[in-house]
Every structure is written in structure tokens, then in C-alpha cells.
View 1 (cartoon, one colour):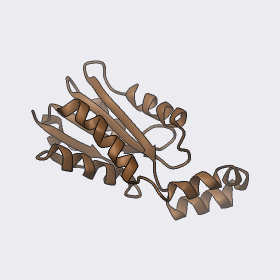
View 2 (spheres, helix red, strand yellow):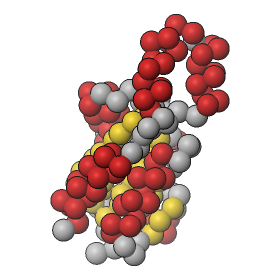
View 3 (cartoon, helix red, strand yellow):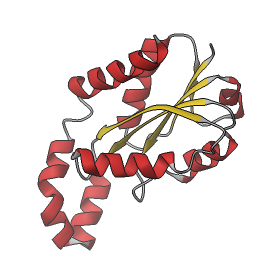
View 4 (spheres, helix red, strand yellow):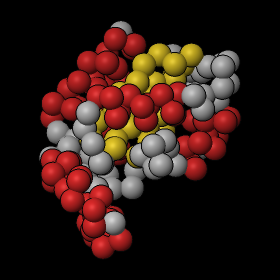
Length: 159
């Protein structure tokens, strides 16, 4: 079985998860979206949340997927509730062409960049006030517990 760990990471959060998956599955394609990754049978597809979904680079890669087993994982900075994270995962899953099989998914909170926090604070002070505590909590994610939960989900699909 050939594996690929394909990811996009703006602040290093998703890359941290991707590295943990790579360490678990061993030899695999590892890196940014690439046609080379399409040679894999199982693709672990990681993203950072943008507009309650994934960014354009991951969306473009998803469009190329055909007859693959796909495990979707990501990070989101503004909230850590399961409902919020599941909603984002559902949005990304909906992009996957039907010829593929989604074998699992996982999302956790991640750190928001200082520049983005400053932008929110300056441009949307009301919103910043509402999410400030969650942004502070995000500084601690992804943490060891997040990675352990991800790996337990990965083990269920590769073992």
C-alpha cells in the first residue's frame, strides 16, 4: 500500500499533525499538493482552515483525486468545540469526488498567527472580544493530546 501525506500549513499547526502521521506510516510521499502524491493508494490530506473549509491549494488537489482512500485532517484557530470542527470537516469532505472513499477525519484547534490576531483586533474589535479566550487557548494546540488522538484514528485505518 502506498501512502501520501499531503498538507498545507500557514502557521505550522497542520504541518505538526502531518509530521506525526508521516512518523506513523513510515515511507510515503510527504509535502505540498503534488501530482506525485496522486500515485498513492491512501492519501492523508491536511489543511488549515480558511473560510470554514480548506484553502485553494488543497481544493485544487482534491479535485484531482480519483479512486483513493482519503483521510482528512486539519486545524482551526478560532474555536475548539467538536461541533465547530466537525462542520469544517464536513465542508472539506463535501469537496471530495464520489469515486473516493473517506476513511477517516480529524481536526483540532491550532494557533492563530500574531498578524491575524492583530488584524481581527483592529478590524473587528467586537469579534475579537468574543473569541479572545479561544485564541489564547489556541496557543497550546496542537498539543500532545491532540496528536495522540489523531494517531489513534490513523491506527484504525492503517492497521
